[in-house]
Image (cartoon, rainbow, N blue to C red; front, side):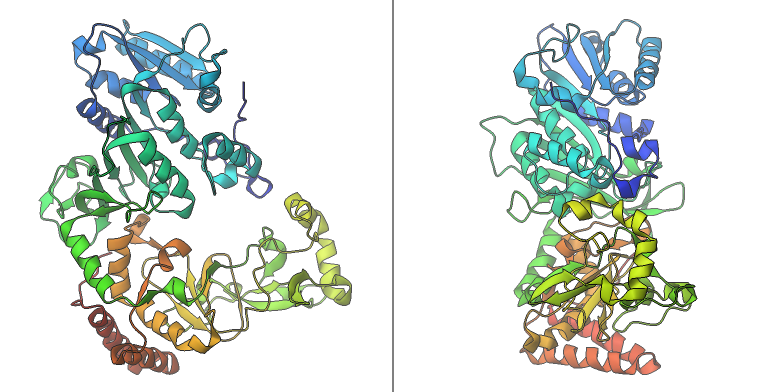
Length: 585
């Protein structure tokens, strides 16, 4: 039998908590009962008088099983046999106490086993569920899989899971859990799964999105957004699914609901976030904590691509996006490749604000580092705090057309400094195993590219913050950057700068992706920004946007620049055929 180890942290994540490493995020009772209710509504339980097999593959404290048993009618509950796995004996003990106290007549089969290891051997018919758990699929599954990111699992473990479940890209632990459930669900079975909403919109989630649509008949998706139902910083989602039937139509509409915080005034009230979902589409609902939430109901739209980003489609949203599309000439991705900044995997060594204070003197190879602290729309601003003004020791160059590590012997002070930190740098064994020098930056990007003009923007921001860098700074890993693949198209950067800093792009983001984090912050990452629209640069309206962006850049900071920003913002809406809207955060 295959064995999947409990996730161990990679070297740069040695300080993660046990809870984070193991994905132990227990489910609130209200959410557990919400999922159980939705499962029951979607289920087609066996009509015969035989047993109904109920599974939680990562049972934790047993709250999900308890909610499912609470929800089932008594006559149905009498037929239920409960199965549960967990890799922690105390969790199983807590589950047994919880369920035996409330439902003493229910048959319980609780085992300290790894669900993923069992599932990968499902077809081998050997020691699968032991003598206690005969090889049979399950009629009902309710689950909150462990949420563990790729970095915490470790590269080797993530690759093993990817190979076993046919996944590509970065693999978070809950991805194979989702697909593993499809392997053990009965032909007429129903499952309710709580998970992070990340897979719906990230590039790493492409393969799991495709697999979910092919493995399951999805009956409803709920994106629970920034409702803060969990203590952990996870934005949850709920999927209720049935086993895919051979006769299922590829054109079936999948109901999709979402709830996100808003600053708009409420028109109605609900006792909690889950109750708020009962309100109609586009309702603004206030909750007891004083927060207001925007409810959306529609259907799942993935752009007719199995790997496409999932969003809530409705008539109004689709009409809005259709208008934008009809006025779109290209996208930011057409300008050039959007890259993340450098990733050193040893920031404390390579990045400092106090190089001048080193006893050995200032080393060679220092370059200015662009961080989020420099960020403001259109043009960067020098940070107020001295410790936010940083430089990076950048030991890379282009030789004979290829990126190379510098000959460190030519830079004696840099060599002395790096060798003083050799123990830390050499501990990054993955650098050496990749055939690199021990003193290299893990992701240095292209040393020849930094000197060219580039758009820079932070990966997370409440509102768009894009600025033009012409000083040749190196971009930090908390930001992304975009350069023209054709230097002759430099005005496209100015056009992108105008569009990117508009309230229009906020609305476009929310219509097209709607992937907000807590406190209304948005993720500005490659797979989103590369799809930002551009109007035809040859049109007079676009040339006006380009000139306004240049004028703003030239006059910042000033009241004149502020007035020009207001003028430009309105014109961006107009160039895409729309009337300016108030943006809520």
